[in-house]
Every structure is written in C-alpha cells, then in structure tokens.
Image (tube, rainbow over all chains, first blue to last red):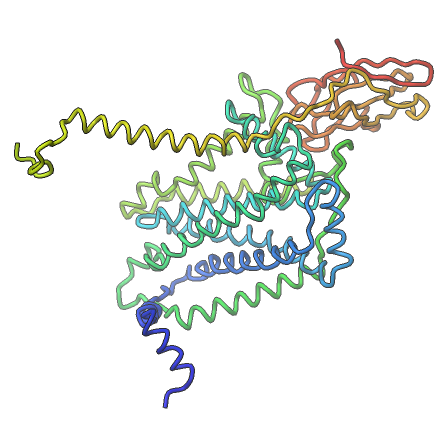
Length: 359
Length: 155
C-alpha cells in the first residue's frame, strides 16, 4: 500500500515526467575548494530579491503615489498600519543588503574568472541584473518623496542629461518633463514596481537556466588538481540545506537591523528649498558622487563632470565586457592583470566611499 | 532549369518577381513595425506643460530679509535666491546650481552662495569661484519699491 504522498507523486510523474528532474537534481554537485564559500552569495542575493518582492507587494497595499500623497502615505504606513514600520524598514534594509550581496557575488565571480568561456552570457545576464538593481535602488529612493531623495534624483537625472546628443531626451524621459516633479515620481513608481521587476525576472530566469545547464563554475586551480583529489558535494540535499541555513541567518540579521536601526523617513521634499547640508546618495553611488566633488569645473576642452561620467561609463563598459577582452584566462593562463585591475577597482570604491561618508 | 524549388511549376516566378515580392513583404513589415513603435516612442515623451511665463514677481518685504542672509523665492516654476548683503543691498540669482541642478543656499559663515550637493561655491555676484560648477549663476534684476522687493528677469 503506497502512502498518499507517493500516490500524488506517481500521479504527477505520469503526466510531467518528474523522474527526469529528480535524476538531474541527484547528479548536480558543487565543487569543494577553498573558494567554495563564494558559491553562496548568488543564493543570498536571490533570497533578498524574494524578500523585496514580498515586502514590496505589502507596501503597495498602502502606498499612494503623487507629490501630495507619497510622503504622507509612508508616514501612515510607519505610524498607523500594524507592523508597517517593520515592513518598510525591512524593505529598505533588504534593498541595501541585496546590492551588497550582489556586489560580493559579482566580485567573487570576477576574481575566480568564473566569467570565462563558456559562461560569458551568465556574466552578462548577471551584470544586467546588477544594473537593474541600481535602477531599483535609484527609483525606490525617490518614492517616499523626501528632501534627500528629491535632490539625489535631480542630480542623478541631470547626470543622464550630460551625455552628448541623446542625454537631454533621456533626462526628459526619466523626469517626465524638464524638472523633477510629481510626474517624475509617477514614472519612477512605474519603473520600480512594473518595468524593473519584469525585466529582472526574465533575466533571473535566464541566469538560473544557464547555471543549471552549465553546472557550477570550477576555478582553474581546481581543474588542475588530480581528479582523485577533487571532491564535490551533492547539491541536493547537502548544499541546499546549507543554503537554507544561511538564508535563515540573513533573515535574522535583516530583522535585527530593521528593528534596532529603523529606516528614517526624513523631511518631506520641497522643490523651493535649498539642498540641505550633508546631502549624499545611497552608499553604492557614493564613490562616484565623491569623485564628482573633486573634479574641477573644467579640464581643458571638457567639463569636469562630463569627464568623470565618461570615465565611469567607459570603465563600466570594460568591466561588463571582461569575458571578451581577458584573452589570457581563455588560453588557460592566469592573468595577474585581472587580479590587479579588480583590486584597484575595489580599493578605489572603498577609499572614495569612506571619503564620501566622512566629509 | 532544374531548380528543385521551381521544378514542376509552369509559371515559375522570375528572379525579378521574387525580389519584388520580398521588397513588398519586408517593406510592409518595416512599415508595420514603424506604425507600432512610433506611437509608443511619441507617448514616452512628456507633453510640454503650459508654463506661465513670468516676467516679474513680488519676492516679499524688505524687513523680512535680515542683513547678511539669504532666502529662496519662487519665480514661476523656478527657485531664485535672494541675498541681502551686509550693506543692505539685495541681489537675486537663479538658485539652480549650474553643476547638477541642485538648489543653492546662502552661507553666512563663508560669505558665499553654496551648493550642498557637490560643494560648489559662488561669490556674491553669482560668479562660480570654487568646486565643480562650470558657469556663474544667472542674475535677476531687483527693484525695491518702498518696502516691497520685486525681482524680474534681466532683459
């Protein structure tokens, strides 16, 4: 006599051929080496994304868009709605941890050269998700319509306007007009809750399918070790249980942060007030913000800010295309240059972030 | 002619006819794509709002503006900074920083007009003197009639 769960499984298996999936799961394994810890950060990023979807939908139940309503509706969520303060605080904290975790994931992939053939497209889809992640952060920052966000959005969209020829139309498109107004808030809301989640979900699906098709990337040093010494761990259940344990830890950290360091709402935006002293963007834009502060008004033929933005744009593009220009890793040699470039970028980001934070 | 594609057809299309059909089909496809995309792209561009053209505004009373202080006033849709110097003269400039669009403020301690966003500084004639701003602030004309301060665009 079969148990009920077996009968349900058999019923589904007959129609959907589940056995193939089970065999696939059983065969999937994770290499064990001293860099194995980095395999967890993709999963943590995914978990934080799921938290954003859930808390985001909860916030949508009470959030009201518009210049006259947005700030007040968040005030209402935080002061009147049961556990509204918690949901909003978790959404803000998880957004920041999401970016942090995605950055750790990205840098670990970079230093392990996991982007090399055949995983170029996995890297590209991941980088695109990171860019959308920044878009999520930038658009979500404006939604409470507070003073800091108002000026951050003015600066951020004005930067888009600097790009020669196409910049101005892009800026007007982003702002929904020549200035940052309620029209901008409406557009950003649309990007934040519809456009970005849609695009992100498509990319995430592609990214995960690639990872499943190709298996976990193995560092070159792992491939070089004798086959006998190469050990792996079954994905199911060993790795997955470790994944879940880590997710639980992340959830606890998130709860502690959200409860003991609740996210501020700030002062309502006033388009006819001066930008307040101490204004700064979210921490992950801080290094670029600080660079713009140091650049002089003019560098010969080119405006300082245009130069800065151009350098960041070219740098970002080179970073995005690293699987295609890093020829030595493809040939099986370990390029020191890549390591130095990565370390220099990290050092630059850390130094300028600290400068931006303290000055 | 033993072309397998056309074998058996009595009226096999000539290359000219085939190309003609291809152009018609591709052209039709392009026209269709354009007729779908154009309205969408045009929709993305926000319509010009009928902005009230302001030539002059009453900015407030002179007595409300202490010496050595500054304030932001509305000039149509734009912010304008009104600065009263220590000698009592009143000056007005566009309050929009020429660097990246933030709104500037008067800093008593520095004796300058200052932008908090990227630490840009302008002197009290609106000239960009330090930091990233590439251009001076646009000046406005100030007229004082009795107690009232009026500002208007420089012609």
